[in-house]
Length: 251
Image 1 (cartoon, one colour):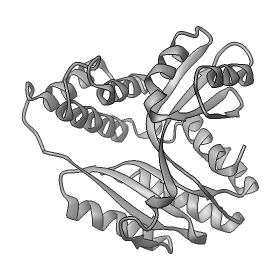
Image 2 (spheres, rainbow, N blue to C red; image 1 turned 90 degrees about the vertical axis):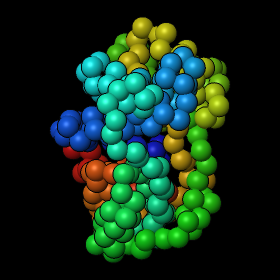
Image 3 (cartoon, helix red, strand yellow; image 1 turned 90 degrees about the horizontal axis):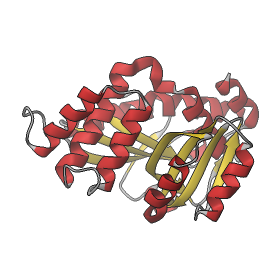
């Protein structure tokens, strides 16, 4: 398992944002609202909305919160702020490329907080395209194997159409073409020995940057700081982390 993939898997396993459920639920609600606004309010007819709802449920978000977010996005609920999707790019320690996806009702505030977070870490706020050329849109599914061999279940996902997987203890991260995400997710959900933790559209790097121990520590702090910003929904990087530093992060 590469340092890049291992970080992603460890992050899901640790549930870094779980300690801040209020912040997490706000981010999940925004995604549901925007998804409902961008398409049909019926999740069976709106794949993005279904993904958002599934992820909210996997984080134990209350049903009432989910329904309010859908109603808000579909125009049947209380009026609220209008969120805009903006993606920022940056270069972090060691030349690592970073992509930050936001949902914000104030793009000036969003840009300022993202910029200051990156520059405080010694990085550079980059122009559009400076980093994203190296990333490809993929589907990613994270599962927890409650019974059986995680490696065997991961191999079964390849038979179902997945492209690659990484295993960390009982947690498996599966990568597939984003167009196959829905069908593979359904097949995995039918397995009794598996708990679906997350299914999402992700940006996966075509090449990575290998970091030393110090650069890894700085980059991990930067990624955590970015993910904790209110406007930030997702953060992706092409860092290949130092295994020793990554091991300390996992503890």
